[in-house]
Length: 420
Ligand code: NAD
Image (cartoon, rainbow, N blue to C red; front, side, top):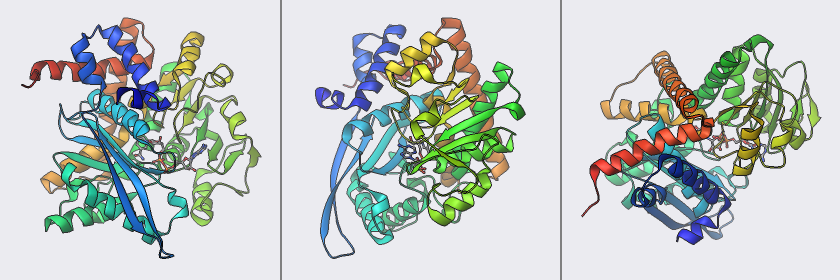
């Protein structure tokens, strides 16, 4: 199984990062092994009937990296490239993210290899409900709590609540987070990840002495995270010059009106055809001069090839695993880019998921202001801890963030000891 996981490039990347941090922390062999490998790897087949009457079997995965510090928490992704190795890598990163933010969770991730854009709502509902049924032996509000990720949204979560609750015979809203507000979701959850990305990117600019109103940003991906990061930055006075999605990239040196773009995407489903911008090659867009570059789509997009050509001051990693280890080496050597690593940068999502779960367990609702204020306090604390640790030990920010997190997990494993 070790070799099988390491054959996946995303898992190999997460494992390489882990090995580097474990060396720095001088973790002994026992703790290295216990921290690195996932506790549970679950794969299920999900048969559903399509609208045309045919039956198709999909493969779904859930990886629970650790249950050492609490229930497993992490998103569920619908994408054609989903496989067990990628899900295991994302579960490992979730684990470090929860530890860094000091949330009482282990990390998990799930995914179904499918193309949600080619499926009808009925097919997606059947897929989600059947996957939830297959997962029932392995999940629970104090065991494993899922949330939206690429290709899933609050409707997906609503179907999961309904399926799980119907099976239990009572409403159990805490089985997932990222639910609709009317189904005991949390105020602020939809925008939480993007809001956190924008908040931290602004903090990084403050550190560099760049005024927000003179700054520019480029955003790759205009889904949940990318769009809310763009709105947050626009609201702070930052000009968004480039935005891409899976259909292509658009550019306007005077700034893209993100609210108008939102309406365009709502009407057409894509940024393609937005009249107030010109087209730009998506790969070239990443290397245009800007203050903040935000990869908010998928993994491994900042590579050894494009890293030497980046012209940003801040790299705000909204996506999970957007920067390869080769790119990291280039960026660390260059020393002129302030990296906000993914485990910190996009931690707003899981933090507000935690708030949602707490509200569900307490049968209580907080206001959006309460949620976003608590979120900013927790992000500010984590940002400051990472920067201090990096400075004290002369480490890149990614290594500092992961070292703080992995040390937390390793310490708890040591304290709990090894059963039996
Ligand atoms: P989403 O499905 O809502 O949006 C993804 C966006 O990326 C879409 O606009 C899509 O068109 C675009 N895209 C896909 N492939 C692309 C490519 N090759 N080039 C340019 N654009 C491309 O997903 P999301 O929830 O916004 O998640 C985006 C990233 O953020 C993922 O890596 C996810 O794991 C991470 N993340 C999400 C959350 C969350 O709360 N949703 C939390 C933490 C991390």
